[in-house]
Length: 474
Image (cartoon, rainbow, N blue to C red):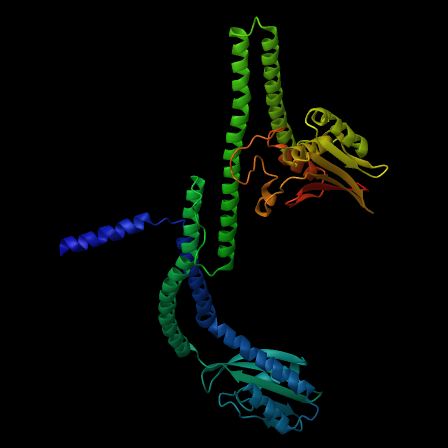
């Protein structure tokens, strides 16, 4: 038996030891208890301590109101005076040289006719308009409030109200309040516990799930059974953040894998052909030239990849500034198309460029050049067997729309929103572009966002159209 009691207290001690005093549950609990104690103290002061003062102030107010009503009464007859006395639970005595009237509503009224004649005589002789007195009623041995006022030249009113002893009332209220205090504190402990548990439980769950997410566990679920709007909104926001972090982490892994692949392949070929030149074809001019050309091509590809990574980093940098100037957009696009001239000659690609007579815009020449170059390069990689790429500038009232169209198989609807991501592919496998690095569209997106240009893509089984819009007043 002794061991069982000892074990119970040991467990209880361990539970209290594990309680964190700064936890949300404890803080809410303590706050509710403290609030209940504050309310009880407030009630104690006003219901017990200040009850007598409040009662006296209340009665004084009733005398003042009765005095005001007497002054404002036009026909000051006995019925009107009795009505005022009854309504205010007070006694009124009207005194004049030719008149006398006294109410008897309150049995504790002080009688002015005899023993308190001195108060009446003092006020009449003072020539004051009003005066407050506090006296002890000899008949009832209680405190009486008197309000004397002059109504007319020879008419005086003496209003009085007895203050009933409150000792017994305060004693009863005190005893009752002690019981009320105990009940309220017990209820506060119980209700505070359940409220604090209801509020803290979902937040504790969210905190635990957040720790999982911090450890890289994207299976964390912040959904809670709470019916509190703010907690549910927090849970939804964290679930959304988790999904976005998962996407970012996936893209990061894909980016690392793809960049590593793109770096490794040309480096491997450069090394292999360099060794071949050194060990085998160094004395064969034709083979040596062929191997060296391969090395140069792979070096160019490697340089292109590094430049694209640098361009993407620059485009994403908040510190990058644009060099805005007037640009002949038609001339710029012609310059880009010339860079692909070798594809027209050797691979029989066709570039169809249609445009208005003159298009002058304000933009960063170098960045817009990159945009057009990457979009045309993307169209080259995915156009159809006819190897046609259409470039068109459409002029509207307030803007120019630049479209680059291929004639390929198009893009799946579910992939459209992801194609601007780095190295995104619908099958999630790396695919080397014929003439690019896989970063081109991401670079395009960032440059267009820097210029605040609207952009997008439409696609069908007859090809895709990438476009961006430039305001005429930019």
